[in-house]
Length: 172
Length: 195
Image (cartoon, rainbow over all chains, first blue to last red):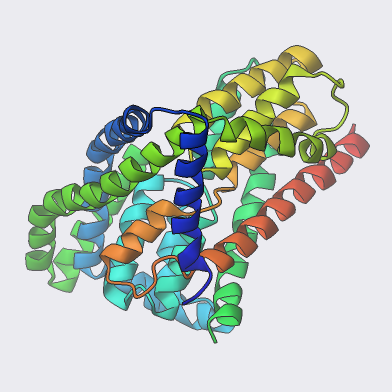
């Protein structure tokens, strides 16, 4: 058994124990949080449907395969699985789009394959950059966000480059 | 923007299917995509509900507040030039705590509040201050401790150990955040010399 599979149960045990100690109403509080997140998931569904439609059609048409095989020689030189390129391109732009591509990669290559793991790491360590920067500055009177977007994209690029390297180092 | 992107994707798919002779597969994809989206949402909804419930207990029992206290000294190092009892720093600490725990719903309003507070304290006018840029950058990089959504999708695809990617995710997250913050600092120096 590896350490990462113990993290979740221990964390949950700790939180419940602390909640009991602090006399939190476990049932009501849990349901409140679960209800809020279920609502969010349902609100996500319409966008996700449109994105699944687009990604599904693109994959079925053979265009996605053409793009990946076109980029394959370059990607192989960089040591990056070419199956993950569409994910890396879409990730900063659309969260739901990235989710549907991730699902695609996991199903086609298997979750425990090299490509499946790199896609998972990439997804787990990045955010919808363009959307986030836009939302955060929209609430202020700032008109020039200056280096915010380039700096955040530098972070994305780092994650892009390191995800394959990290998977290779940890899963030999 | 996403609308244009999707229209372009669909256009590309249709053109490719005509020339590649894959019209049949594309039709099938149109029909199944709705069901795929619903079943994906069900998986996500389940994981999100469990995590939302657990984390609400953490919030109510004061764990988030404790985390905020721990984070403040570290954040003071990143967000420089704020007053000792700056309200913005408190708001930033709450935003980062919520992000670490994967409380996306709570993190965004807290972060926007922190952004407004920074604007009040620093009065940057129309050009964003460095601290505002850093706050946006931190939120645009994922700082979630446990990637629950990804784990749920991996479990659904039949992974033997859905969370075995955790060490990789943490390493990559930390490095990309460090790179993004460094880029923000470096570009600030360049900006000052340019003016």
